Every structure is written in C-alpha cells, then in structure tokens.
Image 1 (tube, rainbow, N blue to C red):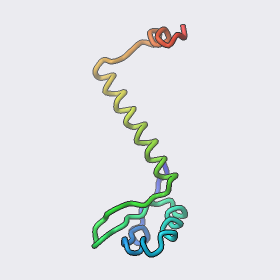
Image 2 (image 1 turned 90 degrees about the vertical axis):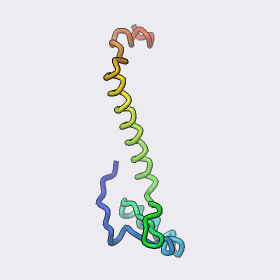
Image 3 (image 1 turned 90 degrees about the horizontal axis):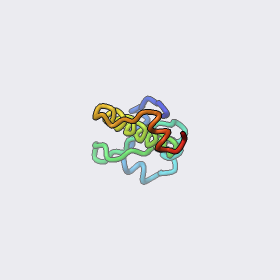
Length: 92
C-alpha cells in the first residue's frame, strides 16, 4: 500500500472546485499519490484517490479479511494437517 501523509492545506477541496476543474484534481491526486477530501457546505462528502492507490487498498483489505478469517478458523478448530491437505489436493 502506498503510505502518504494527508496535507489538509492541499488535499481538501470544495465540490465546486472539483466541478470547475476535475482534470486538475485528478492530476494532483496522481502527482501527490494522496487522496483528496471533497467537501460540500463544510462537510466531507467524498474522497478522490488514484486508481493505483485504490487497487492497493482493496488488495490490502482483502488480505486482511483473509487473515482474520484464517485466525478465526484456527481458533474454532477448523484446521487440517499438511498430510491431509496434500491428500485432499492429490499431491501425495
């Protein structure tokens, strides 16, 4: 995952500014590799981020879900020996 520090002085824009110049906002996101918070009436409404950053976040989230599920399986006793796994997969 791409680690960046949000710079609130640069990374918060009003919805009207996004509407006025969306290309500039997309270029800023790609250049800085930081997400931009879009506000409306002073409240956060959406986040614009690069596709690369979004995909990396989704991959990390899926991995973390798999780890949590694996830990829950171990805790619940849903495990299998390597020998049994080899047999089940037809590797032995």
